[in-house]
Image (cartoon, rainbow over all chains, first blue to last red):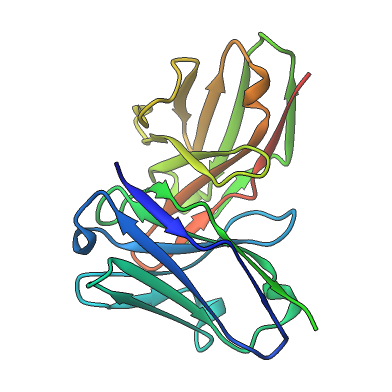
Length: 119
Length: 111
């Protein structure tokens, strides 16, 4: 069965960076794009961007351009989302999600990684 | 890019039915949307996609009590025979070539 496994939690200081992993299993890793979506405490879902695990190409939401980097490691079927210059407003749960196919809805979700930014 | 509008909250009694609405921006009224359920403290879960024609397709394991429909730019999620476990936040999602968009979410309370 398709699984997207995420790490538990991270605590970072303002100005630091965080790199969140998402390990995929149960399907051919290079066949489906992976998205990153975040959710601040008590707030809704916010799309951050997408990576094609086949060739590493990415597209980022304008809000995060210049601060987010998505990469992949095909040897371990893992996608990474790195967010730099962290501020308190970046405190959120970060989810990876896989689409149903190219240009389609999000079908599978990881369990999320809580990133807390605090001095 | 498309915009999705949802009411912030809804409530209905145990065993009754409720219809949640997701409204697409007028220029994007033909778009497909997806509904996701987020129970308290959990990750979102895909429920179904709803097309402009009104056709809907549910995810694996989604109970028959859940259905979808369309009227113009509105996409609906109807839950019948409400159960306590249906108390959750419900989000709609759509996309175009450059972005992916979520509605603000509807918090459903089962009375």
